[in-house]
Image: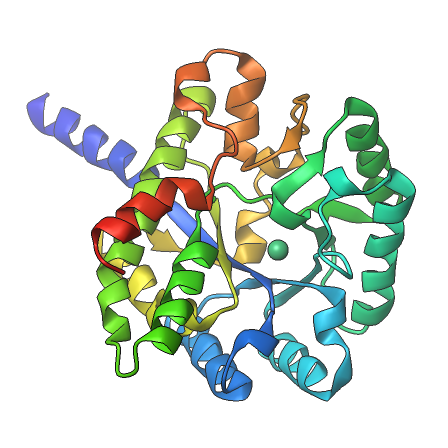
Amino acid sequence: MFLGGAVALAASGAEEQPSLSITMDDVNWQALADPMAANALLLRVAKKFRVQFGLFVIGRNAEGETGQAIVSSWKSAGHLIANHTYSHRPYGALTFEEFSADARKAEDILAPYLSKPMLFRFPALKEGNTAEKRDRMREFLRAGGYRNGHVTIDASDWYFDARLRARLSKTPGFDATRFRRPYLDHLWNRARFYDGLSKEILGRSVPHTLLVHYNLLNSLFLADALGMFAQKGWRVIDAGAAYQDPVFQRNPQTVPAGESLIWALAKETGKFESQLRYPGEDDVYEKPILDRLGL
Ligand SMILES: [Zn+2]
């Protein structure tokens, strides 16, 4: 009896092993001193962990020779390529007509690369500041053959990257590896939060899609971050496999719409107000931490 119980527990524990995939946004290669070198480092991370990433590309970043070479290199390595609008203007600042035109313009540029089923991600995960705008974009995407490329684990890697680059330009010889531990701690902290929320609202750990950005920070530390997750017992999986989970078909009825999918599903229940800050993630939450560390 006792042994049987232990085996059953071990089996259910194995099923509960959390998993995450990497979705990387923007492809702002213009901010990198050596874009092709950083691109090679980022591609190498995916190769090292033998996983497919999702690359959510801002259309205007895929114009011109360098942009095309970068997106092509990800496409030919088998990664998902997805639409992240043409100009990355937030939906809240635009009308439905302006925003949907921006999405369409990106599709024209990204057409040779886009993976099927097509995925679309809202800038800053803002899906509409009114119910009408939210629902019109949902209909526009559905009619255009898109699914929402939801994020389940949101984070502020972009802010760590901005601080790192500011520090490097201000302090010659600054040791960039000082950002490694705080960045990994931040990702772990956010992963545990959203995974915990997933278990509370859905009764299970969903296959996660972690949001990171195509930047210097990740060219330096994303491999270490994935190593950390693996070491803590998380499986690193393909982005395409994660998006097959039915949770990604959910359309939470929240206004303003967006944030992490897990955040929005929790918000929709009305039962997690004390755990849900707005926005879900932002620089204001991380600034005091980096200030305190003298970074
Ligand atoms: Zn973005």
